[in-house]
Length: 330
Image (cartoon, rainbow, N blue to C red; front, side):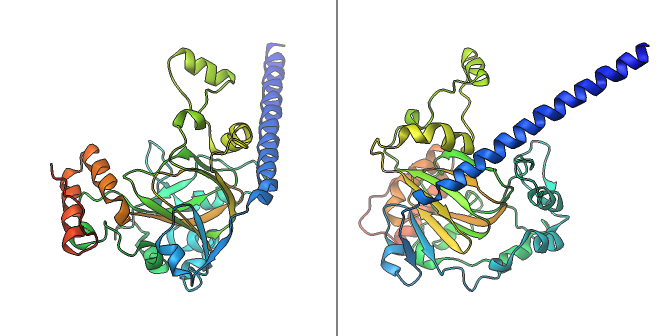
């Protein structure tokens, strides 16, 4: 009898767990579709690749078309990368180390919406010879129309040992993304998309952090607050719960859906959150614009990279990347 009761309790627990998981899956799939349906909010004009003036001097986010037409990476798929780098370890932010890319690919290609493991979102920057991923560098190129004059590419700065990571392979399942944040070091960034759609929301640097990170009111958020902790929302939650209340406040936000073959670029300091509306493959790089030299060297020094900051300043000046800017040496 005890055995029968035990089996019955186990079956009931399994049924409850399955039921709760199904509700989570359905809720996530519904939220993704809701975010996808907001694509009509994308009102940003596309910049053609031939518009060099806009690409060399932009004060707000831009989306450029035609820059990737000749890139071999435009032919990437999860299947093709699995064949090339399937056994290579990629960084998903796990404290236990990297995971093989074939697991990332299998997870991203799950057929049912809402079932992917969102933790398997790749932000990988290791393309060394022994990483198993150096071959990917052959498929991507520089974007000189956007990055010409980068203060981090001048002379010895380009290969300096202390240069912070500046390029990443991105690979994520539907529903994954990055929470609202600013890129570090005073860098400007671009993101080239090869597979899937990405939903972006961006805010100017002038928007206060508190405005974009209001306290969470759910049970977990309130419990964390009692412990003096602030738990940020994920990208989906931010767009679904916080963004609607911010509209109409004249904050200067830019809301868009990036399509395959497009490059988004945004100036230093812009807040941004991103949700992958599909399984996506992308490549992103950060660079330092001349106009941001002072803030870049300041951020580097604050981050303990004073030697690199000095090299950036010296090389920029020596190569005439900047003119008549005061030196700041410490």
